[in-house]
Image (cartoon, rainbow, N blue to C red; front, side, top):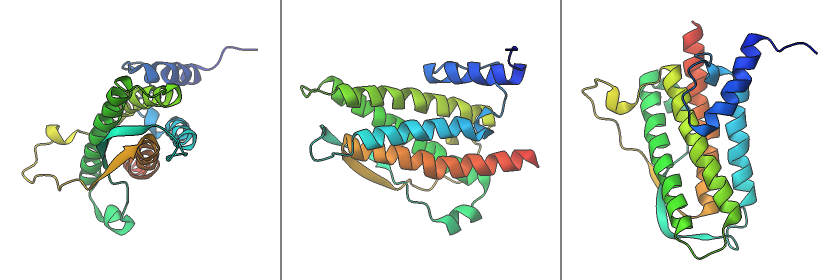
Length: 191
């Protein structure tokens, strides 16, 4: 068996380092454009959603957590400039990260047995850090770094009162707006 080619080896190394939240300096600059990378995060999010499906029986959050609305108006989305799409994705990613971290804190302070949600919360925290790093590598600028005269439109939000709802939003956000945005950004980079 021969040694894997250098790009394959870099890709595999990147997949190992990204969940740790470490910057992947040796990663190909367009790693997020490799569909296998985003699919890995989508599968993790779906697993978390599926494991916590028993919302009624599963652990509830001790407070409601604000999360981004994941509905996409495809007609409006396609008419947006890529910078507007990036702004909406960054806003959603930021709010989702705050929500997952809040869920992690609530779980840590809870008296409920929560081994399963804890595992998936920890994976989500790591995954969101990695996705944030990958978006930066893609060249997507965070809204606060954009020299823009027009303030961003307010982000539509929902509330989650169970881990099931929190993970459903996490899964839908990655499969929806994040995937749409990265797909469009990667196509524009290829031009």
